[in-house]
Length: 257
Ligand SMILES: C[S@@+](CC[C@H](N)C(=O)[O-])C[C@H]1O[C@@H](n2cnc3c(N)ncnc32)[C@H](O)[C@@H]1O
Image 1: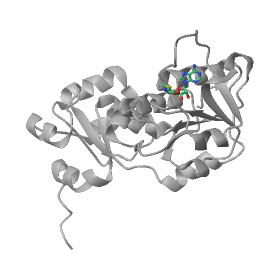
Image 2: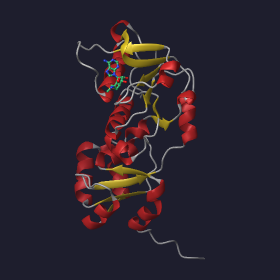
Image 3: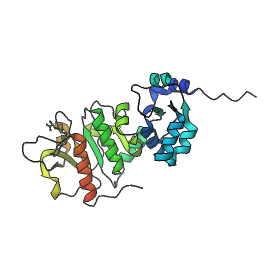
């Protein structure tokens, strides 16, 4: 009989997994990831006592999981593992959910909450803020088109780890899930006179150039947000916030349990 394998050194585990896992940067990203069922093989902090005290105050539901998971490492080790140190000095690696499972969720009908589509988004912080909104409103998922990786660590940081609470994938316009497509554009029909269906795809254009021709061609409706003359447009993430709020305030399904 062979001896049981020794406990793996968390830093070795980190180096072995870093290229193939999702970086959770900061306490809140790790907290949300655990809360929404992420598999987290390794987590580090420079101060276990402080991180567990934060968990006791803000997230008692995941304190025991953090107690079992968090390894304390010297500050120099922590800063060598992350691209940009987080004020909470907590970082972890999580397994990215299966794309096939996400595609099944995104395409399943009937759908009780919308899918948000970001058409060629450019700003990683905006994408993260939108994923956080989608999670908060219980949207079925967030689909991006174009080059931006919606699982980039800066997006995950901006989304506070809430990627694990919704289905986030990158698709081409001709692969979008089924459902009536409502594309948000200042030239569209005033949203205040509309009820957005629960199975809608709610599409938003890029920060620089708005909706692409391809997305416009797939759209069933163009919808505008109220805006006084001479203002060109709203920020992408705030447009998503207003639209999801409108959907919820006009009878959209309540938050998922
Ligand atoms: C920053 S805006 C894009 C501005 C871009 N320069 C353009 O030409 O459209 C990003 C996206 O937010 C949405 N958006 C912003 N303001 C809007 C408004 N007043 N009505 C509807 N959608 C809006 C649209 O989907 C738009 O493509």
